[in-house]
Image 1 (cartoon, rainbow, N blue to C red):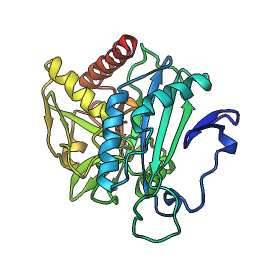
Image 2: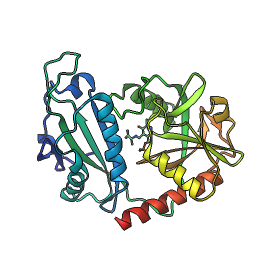
Image 3: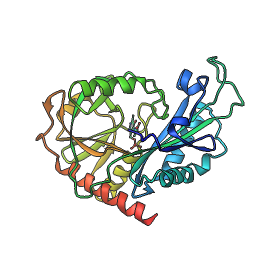
Image 4: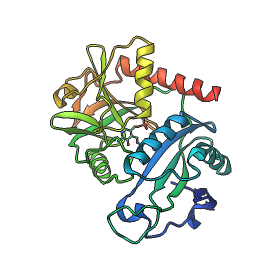
Amino acid sequence: MIRVNNDVYLNGQWLPVGEAKVSVEDRSCMFGDAVYEVLRYYDGKPFAPKLHVERMRHSLDAVSIPLPEEFERLPQISDELVRRNAMPHCKAYWQISRGVAPREHEAPAGLKPTVLVMTYEVPPLNVDAPAPRKRAILTPDLRWLRCDIKAVTLLANVIAKTHALRAGAQEAILHRDGVVTEGSATTVFIVRGGVLMTHPLSPLILGGITRATLLELARKHNIPAQERPFTVDQLLTADEVFISGTTTHVGAVTEIDRRTVGEGDVGPVTARLNRLLIEHILATVTQG
Ligand code: PDD
């Protein structure tokens, strides 16, 4: 939960969260006409801020929201907020909406985008912790066809994740036409016969920054990896399944719809990639 005395950054101002107000006519409120990023801070240092800036630029370009004047400074604004809130271990949330205008569907030109940055405290990374075990459910992917845009319009993701939690699971794995796309807020990987597989980059998934990092680490450490679609059946009969994300890191999926995955424990490839990811993150943030 956010602490009430925390500051947020809103349109050039530092304000206590309770005093930061956005108009009811902000297009994020009416239409979800906004994009966002979530990045993780470790001991006050962000992981891969440039990649988050680039992905946000992609999202903004895709929906024709002009870059706000502080766009290039978002990492510095975010660092400053982490310092102000004395929150070295946190996730930072960046949101840019199209701006404020009377409610009409068409996007008016010339609006001033609304820029919001917030931080949420998270536990410090436990370097020696094994990948946590997660239960998942399978559910149809009800989202639109531009999931590569990190839009705040997340109703289908919210429904999927809520179903998962009500079923005693921690994540919903989404499928479209028999193919697994991703999790409600994570990337999904499987391992079959020692080969790592994840959905290729396409408008059907978010290009996860943890996904890209894991694929790079797999290549560097000679773990065979393929970016290609896999079916629900291949998921259910995989040797290992895991999810990844900025706040999740690597989570071993040991149960799907109450059926055991593989040996029902954290598999060897999952364990190895979890370790490689944590080592890589800590080395990268320490180097600055
Ligand atoms: N979610 N897929 C979806 C649909 C996501 O929402 C996310 C991240 C990911 C993983 O991306 P990354 O590795 O860049 O975090 C994949 C964020 C954390 C969120 O919405 O809170």
